[in-house]
Length: 251
Image (cartoon, rainbow, N blue to C red):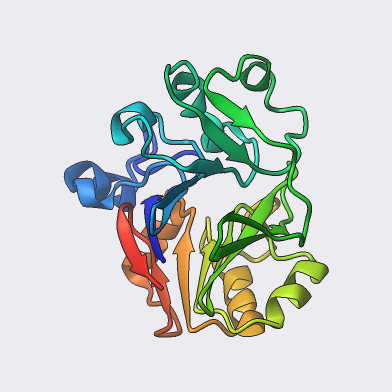
């Protein structure tokens, strides 16, 4: 399996409009430091599965027929905004998997165009977009119905867990039973004195690392505060890495 993290930013992206913090200034000067909306591309054989559709240039990134499907974590705008243009394509057909929309899909589902929104997935019930690959929806804690995903193939496992603040007890217990090769985790902000409302801070991500014990953890969905914190601080474990846009991870 190959997982490419196409976007690794939070809803504001990096640089943040109007912000003059060091992280935002650095990102304006160095394009490699910029962060677009959080999304990924899973590739295995002929399968090319887009995880979340928040990038606004999907029609330029992917030629007709290149996407096997789209896997949504949830229906907040920064995870679906690219679909509003993509849907008006022609001569193509793209299945869309995901949770309940929580009433947020609106016009997107009313006029889906080439997007085929499949019935909502069920928590902890795996499905197989191709014969040798299994994907299990894992409930997250967020302000909209949200799934992370356990992706398995040939004994290798990736847990893609965003957007969330901590993990529901049932989700953590479910994931603990597996030997995880990679955990990609929402880490929007640096350590906070109190847990954030809707996303992990680094403290929560470190607690998840200790609970799940993956071989490697990759921090994504980062905000500019987290990037600025990283300018002055190091992560405590060598197995934990910070994602960058377009970084490629083989499992």
